[in-house]
Length: 385
Ligand code: W6P
Image (tube, rainbow, N blue to C red; front, side):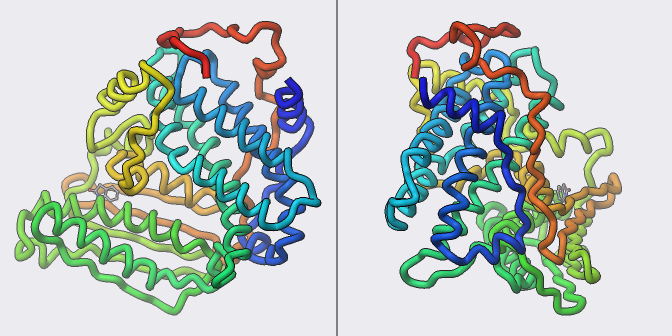
């Protein structure tokens, strides 16, 4: 009860403080960062709880119940800490939260797809929910990772690379994507990396790697399917251009893989669609897997998170947008596709967190009896969490 009302208070009366990569990069004093995070993370987790509760009938979706309870638990554990606890206690708490939340992406995308099967929402609404949720998740993830990175006993460092070299990142992503492509198809099309001028900028290398790996996989697959052999594809290399000015780093990936039908351009950005398998099959699988209990950890078998999950493009754009970047796809049907990734070079873009709360409905936990709500009616659950 105390926890519930405290979470409501945090979510409604307090605001997260959107940061820039430059600011996070310079949070290098463990004690100061801990003081900040002891206040900031509970605010952000409480809002995540409230975001889940803003979905009508969220209680009828096992994934949503699980997500809510994971964040409520994270909130509770952080609020139980005080300034007097030592750095190690705080560190272990963050590590534990991180470990418990490792499959969050899987749960929320699956949950959102299940929500969508009830007709009370449009794709647009569910996609917007996911964009807001996932952007907020990147934020807490980076802040926690920053603390864990600067307090690492072996080599304390920042989660943000102040001198991120996009060419090095692209080369690594291209090698990985080509290896995967060869594994899958037996050969892989050529990739040309055009390095125009020595760009260095503060960024999270893992995120840039994720985005470029995702784009290159798509281009490779398109070229493989269009040309059929390395020899035939030799004249149509995938080209990556890396350049930009003082303010912006631009990475363009061009392929001659036949393009995307213009009518399909919208669904490329939807979390609800996947080229791997139809979203409805996954939802069906998810529903049957979770109808017995809330144990949804069947995905946790060491496979790379979200491999083949089918929403790499919207996720990539979400990463890009987190600090004021942008990702765009342009198709020439029957010819090829250009992907443009724009990133803020200064590191001064603020986290794209929603800081207003006016539109959020009164949280259910404030309402009289717990089993309220209407709209749709998902499968009732046997057991409460
Ligand atoms: C395609 C489809 C696609 C998606 C994303 C990036 C590049 C490409 N190329 O044919």
